[in-house]
Image 1 (cartoon, protein in one colour):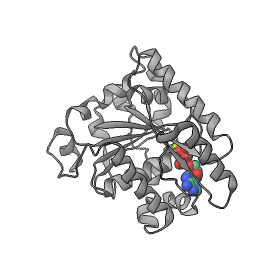
Image 2 (cartoon, rainbow, N blue to C red):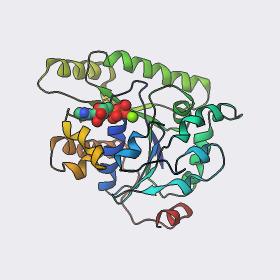
Image 3 (tube, protein in one colour):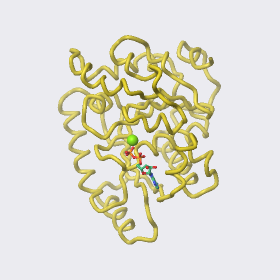
Image 4 (spheres, rainbow, N blue to C red):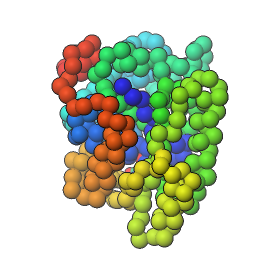
Length: 274
Ligand SMILES: Nc1ncnc2c1ncn2[C@@H]1O[C@H](COP(=O)(O)OP(=O)(O)O)[C@@H](O)[C@H]1O
Ligand SMILES: [Mg+2]
């Protein structure tokens, strides 16, 4: 199981959109994906048409009051599961901060999932602010997947993230953290700016930048209000094709650690078969 944090301290760059649609596309390829909504705004949660107000979030597990396996919900897509966010999660910031091991709460919460192999990948949809939840994500993750909007200040934003990753490594909280990939989002082929930004980012970050670029598409912004991923909402459009290509590239990069398979019978999977 590999833990991938969709992280960028900037809001509105496509973290949630990428978490939801990459998650759906990976599940379509036969991989078992757990998406964890770590943002109290709960945008990923509502993208699946879920409300997230019934105590089903990571709040209790983070505070040690429940196991994460109790909070995992199926989605309409086979192989794609979610731990929703709810308003309680906003309060978790303050309460976790009081705990002794406040930076490693999420890592500990995910440990029962590490022990069995129900999931191939856990995608953490991070909040933009660099608070306790985001810090916990950085401490728990094997790697970051950083969406960057094709706009003028893209490189400046990336430099900040690189520094952040170095700080996390230096602090000793997570010495294996790395930027596993950078995804350029909201690419507009009609503008020189988009082309120029992609070229600049590739020049500085080389191989770490995914070949697949996500186009600007109004379909991507419409899909969540129907509770659908782009693969259901506009399956043959450019945006769906892009997220499918991103999923294939993601799997190539991860050396296909997990081949599609039947759900193995494990404590967590029993919970999922409800
Ligand atoms: N490729 C895209 N084309 C058009 N709109 C997009 C695209 N990606 C994201 N959006 C929209 O931009 C806004 C911010 O995206 P979101 O994924 O919520 O960003 P973040 O999670 O980083 O804050 C949302 O309204 C979303 O629907
Ligand atoms: Mg978001």
